[in-house]
Length: 80
Image (cartoon, rainbow, N blue to C red):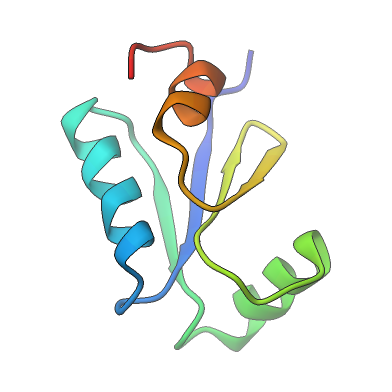
């Protein structure tokens, strides 16, 4: 199963920071796109979710809006 992880975030988003800290704690490799600076990725995120809220986390092809530690861990197949 594809476990590629991408996060669309902004530097001032508390939940974005929590998600990135969770990835670091669990040694999960991820790609971060700062949608406050990257207009192309911001548009990609909006097309994917229909809204501007961050974080948007993509695991494999599964899109999740917001940070829910338990749900994210389940998607990654790791302990929360």
